[in-house]
Length: 113
Length: 108
Image (cartoon, each protein chain N blue to C red):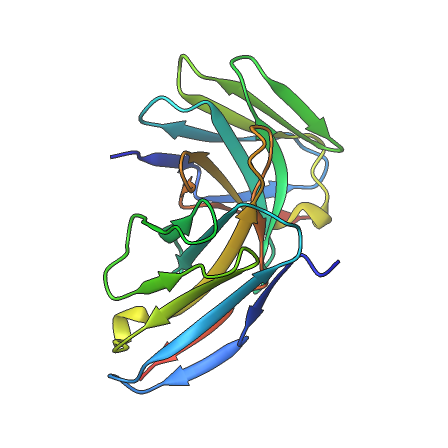
């Protein structure tokens, strides 16, 4: 049981390049989330999904797109990377239980030059 | 807009003493979460508080929730070095709104 995994762990991009971050969970969770964490700040929600085929915007969605084609995967795309998107990206998942916490992946460190 | 405020943002603790971290949030929320993050690591769930008056304890950490005051506290009893980390509170739904975190350092 791997929990929540993220690919890649680290990536350097040039301004204007595109990339996709992959999140996978093996806990059969319905809900999945993408957050970003900047130095000295808490996490901010980018997009989330409440089930396969659904997505919704969070607090800071601009410049990102997401897809949830399979229940276990949640993809975060950057179409044209900007230096302001330099951050650590965390994926999380949770079940529908009211008492459930969110389980976080190990994070992807992204540097945009 | 939901706002979550933690204080203090930095806490230097002496081993063996007790301390409290405060978490205020601006709108009604049924659930409050506490997480721990070690440097360069992911977030580890500590507590989920579901109702007014809820109190949970794990080792030297105890968390409580007052939904009427929109306040949660994380109390640390007899601090030890292993508790050095950044502690976040968060509220939902949907998705979590996080406080800025409290960076805790425990000194001998």
